[in-house]
Length: 202
Image (tube, rainbow, N blue to C red; front, side, top):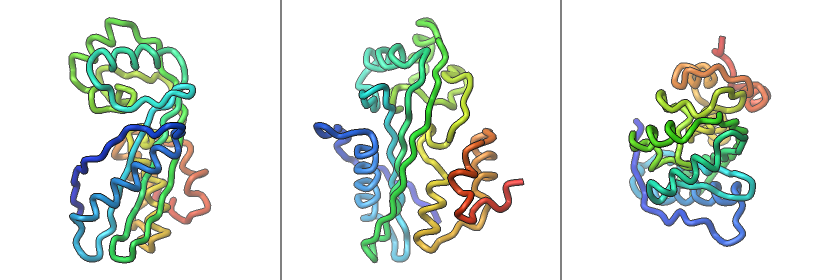
């Protein structure tokens, strides 16, 4: 059984906090906060994602003008997306955590495309004001990293945590990721190759 529950947290970065610290802290805080809704024996998953452009952390835009600014800032060059997952066992008060950063080369979309995308309403709950998987906007033309990381839940890293927690997934994780996201991943062997979790891919 899987239950999704939103938690209300202050997601403001702390002074001097870098991307990996930021997403790790929030993923952990979300898992612990959501554990209040867990039944006995459940594991609780928290996840967080941030867009990193140079030294700037780009979270969710505050309004339309902020979303427009972010999209203009990101276009035509490569930035990073960092996602953290935290798996928490509230009964044992034990937590496992993993984080990954993907390189994302944005295409040089124009201002008209930005305005059309803003009208969809999609950017306003997304880190960096975009979804890589949006069918109309297509912000990325070429991509060769962990697609699930950019979407916000790196499944191979979650599988590694499940193995550490003694809950090894029963499915081929890369195959499941490919089916769910429609993306043929090239980095999963580096992530899972020594973890014994890649069976069932082909």
